[in-house]
Image: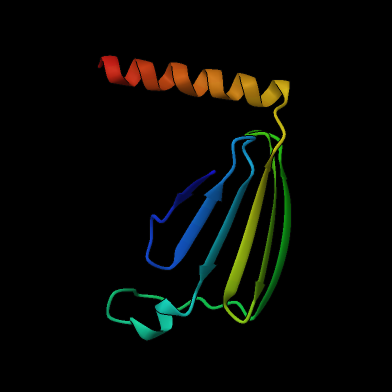
Length: 96
């Protein structure tokens, strides 16, 4: 398991099988107004996404500005092809 903290308001747990669980809070935007030009706090938010292009399922649940997001990998032929195209595009861009 890999634990990362890219932003001061979030922590990610990434497991070897590709499962990612993210915990973050939105209240920092409200208290640090000078740093941001917006304040977006969700009191209740539930979202489920089947991302066919990237090949994963994503579930997001927010209650009073505290969020848990779970990404479950689900590799498909379409997602494999998408990543091949992206790798090819990036390699071509690096050559320029």
